[in-house]
Length: 548
Image (tube, rainbow, N blue to C red; front, side, top):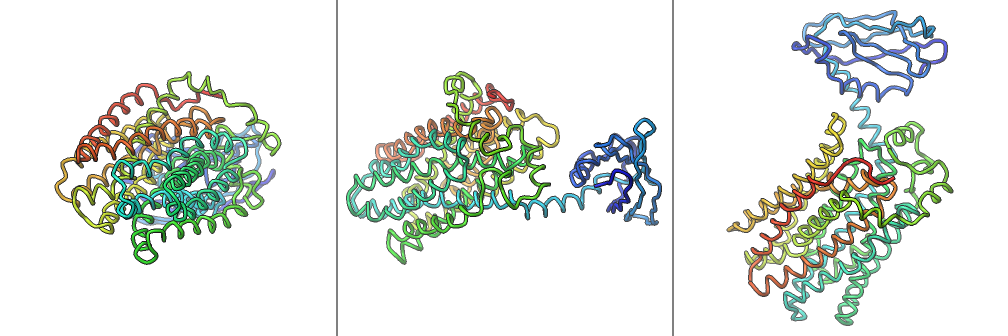
């Protein structure tokens, strides 16, 4: 940062030749954005008439360049201008021009070192630690619920359950999940995601740990424990949304959600692959005990190291705090007291339900949960029933698509942020992402119906889940777009309604299979739902703020 009177700044620019450059209009403006983001808040660089200009934006003074050196090189070269910048009177300042001697220098080269520096800054930042812990928590969230999807096969054989009753056992998780979403979202908005998430993980880990005892006690006790487990897990997504909205600027939020949901989907992979191994070594209840203990280990790191809001973090740097707050449209007040006060009023439920953008999110959530839980709960059974593969093979065929979904989800988030940074409206980006997230899996499920081998079926399933991950940069982010002050409770409302749809789809799949002996009709119905929801979303969704 420059001093009030004078400064000397050495700027190293790794520049490459770009022979096609002939006018300032063709200079890469993203390079200037990257360069400016790496400088202090008082400095700004501009490109004008083939020249690079710097300005002190705090004092409104232009800083003239007095010295520059350039070595000779035919193809690529390193430019190390050393210039003396001094304070000049605002009325006398005409601008500081640093003219490149070769107009074929591309400004996009200025971004190279800056982008690398930004990556390192992010990796070592406090918000990177926050999203890493969220991702691990979400991974445990999904791993715990997937255990029953694998264990249901031997449990059904042991207790003689029918396919329809097995669907009821699997759906019991969703009974509690349905009830806790709104309350969890409202609590996260009021008290922050850290505390609510900690209670959620503690309770669902305990419920997972108690599942072996409950199943041996009675069916009623098993259903009750699974419902408690679902109620605890119902707070996870609202807490994730609230925490990310406070810790990440809008230009990084889709990437943060992508990373968090990548952990969520990797939990599927871990559980699907590890559960059969743990069952073979420790019996059918081995994975329940293992993942229950892992939840408590995660809590021992989360509680002392994560904070609800970056402004209360004792170790966050000033530059990171400024970076976060500059990119957040809505943020809590500057004191803990005022933060609580802003969320004490009751959410405006009637107003929220009166707007079509809210219903666009609800319809999207219903469709997403319907398709997601059909695939999550029934794919191991699908591969065993349709293709007669054993449990370990079914787990492998089911796990591969979830792994690719984790990677695709991160890519969708990064691509969404790139579109926003490139000037596309948030509304347009959300509609593009959600359209891919629905049309893609709809087409893939139709292809899955025609699959004649487990390998082809796994390929279609991989395509369906990978493309559905684009929804993470669609409706899942849209809650904060339209209602920044009520993102948690809005997530809870829409997710609770979506969870009811998931209950219907999970139980409905069991009945369809029992009555018709085939998954095909239900998969076709799910594909049609994807197509209809795409139309509704593009008609009524918006990226603008609807609720203050």
